[in-house]
Amino acid sequence: MIVAEQKPISEILDMLPEHKRVLIVGCDTCVTVCLAGGEKEVKVLAAALRMAKKEFAEIKGTSIERQCDGEFIEEIREQVAQSDIVLSMACGAGVQMMSDFFPDKPVLPALNTLFMGSNEGAGYWMERCLGCGDCVLDLTAGICPRTRCSKGLMNGPCGGSENGKCEVDPENLDCGWNLIYQRLKSLNRLDTLMAIQPPQDWSKSHDGGPRRLIREDVRL
Amino acid sequence: MSDSILILHCAEGAKKALARMTEEGHRLPPQFKTFELPCTGSVNEVLLMENLQNGANGVVVLGCRKENCKHLDGNLKAERKVARVKRLLSEAGAEGKFVEMVFTAPDEGKRLHDILLGFAQQQQTEGKSK
Image 1 (cartoon, rainbow over the protein chains, first blue to last red):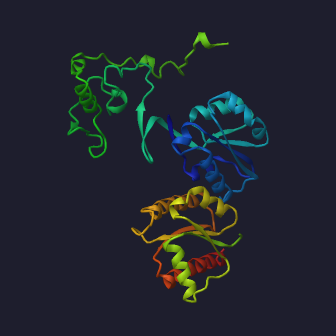
Image 2: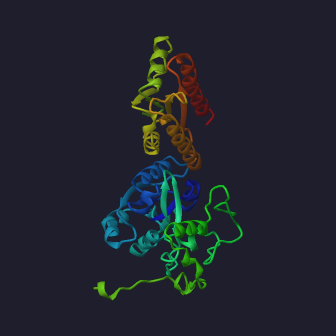
Image 3: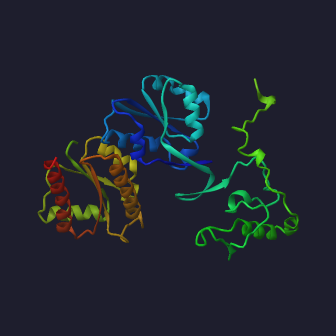
């Protein structure tokens, strides 16, 4: 899922001009799971803005299934028409999609989008995927060296690995390459590590503008 | 609920402390309203923020003493929620609104009364200074 966190309310207040009708829109998918921008967070933010020092003509809140999907955005077209400003509690993709759908309305972000990751326990999320466009998880026992290694090394570990921990945060951060080694060992696949991996092909990552995926077989 | 202070108390130690307070003859001013929860662990940000937004000037979450929660750590969970709401109120600059966490034992009627009256007096003082 995409992991995000709410901006400080003071920053959100700085973005919002006074005496306007504000519609807060939550997103019921990724940012709901990471407790940043779901229905509950919309209610809390709406209450905070209603009690804030700044005065607004109206604060309303709603939530849709996904803000990165036009068919769900259409559901709130009427509510958006009756507001002056949309405050989106989605990830950056959702905010941009909402801006595309409502070009005559300012759509402002209430969250900072952080990474693609997993839920590691109550209140703990960790980055798992960089979206590099060139997956090597088959070679590394399902542990991503680009994400889990602090240096993103393709041939690790480096000298900063000690007792299975990374020098970046020896208390809390596992060395990604130690994890890869241990898992390959348990799978009896250590021979995989004998091959020298070529440098990452970053042309498949964020290079040459926004990445696009077009599948002709499902286009209308 | 304007100018009111809402006490969200658990059904265990805090409820008994409120009862003890009354038995000992310590009365609270009428602006105090109480609402019973099975445990303060069920308190969440929505409950606190919406009560404040809907007119309560303050919300006091009243739970058992630390390490005496019948549900093990419900009071400690509530403490963290209260801390977060305090931060939200501060960031928003919500004047005249407050939220507090109080831990109490069943036999602390007088101490509880003093603490709660303190919140009311503080609120009154802040109101006059504006």
